[in-house]
Amino acid sequence: MAKDKPPTPRGETRRKFLVRTMQAIGISIVGGVVWGAFVKENTYDPLVIRPPGALPGDEFLKKCIKCGLCVEACANRPSVPYEGGKKKVTLRLATPGDNKPLGTPYFIPRDVPCYMCEDIPCVPACPTGALEPDLVSTLKDGQKKLDITKARMGVAVIDQKNCIAYWGLRCDACYRVCPLLDKAIYIEVYRNPRTGKHAFMVPKVDPDHCTGCGLCEHACVTEKAAIFVLPRDIALGRAGKHYMKGWEEQQPQEAPERIRGLGHESVENYLNTEDLLNE
Amino acid sequence: MSEERVGPLRYLYKHRFLILRRISQLTIMVLYIGGNIYGWKILQGNLSSSRFLDLVPLADPFAVLQMFFAGAIVGVDALVGALIILAFYAFVGGRAFCSWVCPMNVVTDFANWLRVKTNIHREEWQLRITRKTRYLALTLALVLSFILAMPAFEYVSPISILHRGLIFGMGLGWTMVLAIFLFDLFVIKNGWCGHVCPLGGFYSLVTKPSLIRVNYNKDRCTECMECVKICPESQVLHMVGKHSSIVNSGECINCGRCVEVCNDDAIYFTLRFKKEEVSHETK
Ligand code: SF4
Ligand code: SF4
Ligand code: SF4
Ligand code: SF4
Image (cartoon, rainbow over all chains, first blue to last red; front, side):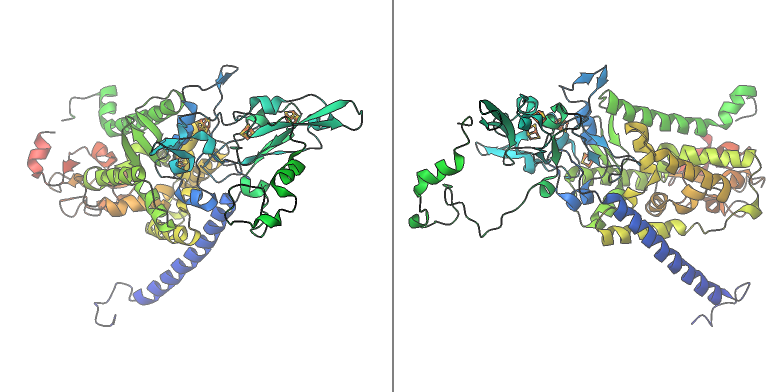
C-alpha cells in the first residue's frame, strides 16, 4: 500500500521502517525484562516492618506512592522523642542501599520503635489508602475511631535461649515498656528446678494483642535483642481448621458436651496451671 | 527593550527565566524539606504526592496512572491531587514541570552546560537514539505496571530518588543521579530529559493544549539560530526561519531559554489565544 505514496528522498523508507520497528521491539523486550527483573528484585522483602494500618504485602506496594507523608506525620507528631538533640523518627523511606522496596516507608524497631501514638498521625496522612484507617479502627457508639491497639505491624518473638529471664535472671525490660502490658507481654512464674527455691519469671508474648510496635525489641537489654518483631505471617504458625479448642466459650460450631471428657473446669485448669500471675 | 542594559543588569536580563526557574526549583525544594523537618504546612510530602497548605492534595498524575494500570484502587486524595496537577499543566503551564519544578533538570542542565563549555560536545560523538524513546519508555512503564501489578517506573525513577533523597536522605541514591549526569555529559546531549524520561514523555503528550506558549515571529527574526542552538528540545523550533507560529509541541518545556537568547524579540512567551502584537507590546 506504500506504492502510491510519493517517493521519499532515499526511497528505502519501508526497509528502514521495518528495521526500526524490529529494533524498537528488541529494545522493548530487553528493556522490559531488565526493568521488570529490577523491580521484582527491588520489591521482594518478606521481612520489612511497615507502619500501622499498612495493607498486606503486594497490595501495599501497589498503592504506596512513596510520598513520605506518613514519615513526615511521624516526624512531626506531637510527642516525638529526642535523643542527643536528634528527633527519633520511627518511619523512614527506603533509599537505594537499604535493600527495601525503594521509597516505601518502614521502620527498624531496634533503632526506633513505633510509639503507638493514640491518634496514629501517620495513617490519615496517607493519600492513597496504602495505610488503611479501617485496619486500625474500632467501632465505638456506631462511629469508627482510630485505635492503635488494632495495629498488626508484626509480632514480637522471644528467643528463649538468649533471653536472660529464661536463665533465671530478673529482667522485665520488655514487659515494662510494652504499651499493652499484661496483654501483649505477660510474665509467667514457675519454679526453677535447678536451684529448687528460686522462680523463673519469664516474659511471654500473646500474638492476639501484640501490635508489633517493637518497643520491647528496642528496650531489650541483651546485646542483640532476644525479643524482636517479625512480620506476622512469618512468625506465626497456623494449626488448621480441623483442630478445635473445646474449652473456648465462643465456639463457631457447638461442640457436643460429652466430648469434653474432663469437663469444662478441669480442662481449663489442666492447661493453665502455670498461669498463676496472669489472673 | 534591551538596548540600554549593560553589564550585570544585562546579564540578569539575559538569564531572567533561568534565574526565576532556579528560584522556583529551590523554593519548592526548601518548602518540602521544611515540611519534613520542621513540619511547615506549605508543601508536605514530595513530588509523588503532597499536601499544599495542609489542604489541597497534589499528586503525580503519571504515578497514579501507573497505579491504575497496576490494578490499585487509589485513595481519593491521590486521585484528586493527580487531576489538579494534570489539569494545571495540560491547560495552563505546559511541560513546565520539567523546567520549573523537577530537580533532575538542574542536574541535566549542568551536564549540558559542562558539555558545551568543555567542548565535549561534538555532533559525531553523539550516540543517536530517537527522541521518541521516551514514549517507548512510557509505554513500557504502563505495560510493566500491569504485568507486575506494581507502579513500575516509580520503583526505578531517578527523579523520585533524587527528590526523596534531598528531603528524606539520599542513601546510595546519588549513584543513580551521577549515572544520569554522566549519561547526559558523555553519551547524549539532553539525553535523559530529552530522550528517555517517561515522565517527560507523559507530560509531552498531555500538555499540548496548554495556554502558556512560546511564540515565534518570523518578521523579526534574523535567523541567527541561537534559539534552536540553546533549546533542549530543539525539534520543537522546527518553524524557525520558515514561518511564524506558536510552539505547538507538548515537548517544549517552557523554560524560556530561547526567549532569553533572542536579541531580536522574535521569540517570546504568549498566551495561546492572545493576539500576537498586543501580547508583544505589553510585555
Ligand atoms: S503510630 Fe508509630 S509510626 Fe505512626 S506516627 Fe506514631 S510512632 Fe510513627
Ligand atoms: S503516606 Fe502512604 S503513600 Fe505515602 S509513603 Fe506513606 S504509605 Fe506510602
Ligand atoms: S509485645 Fe512488643 S511489639 Fe508487641 S505490643 Fe508489646 S512492645 Fe509492642
Ligand atoms: S528485655 Fe530481653 S532479656 Fe529482658 S526479659 Fe525481655 S526479652 Fe528477655
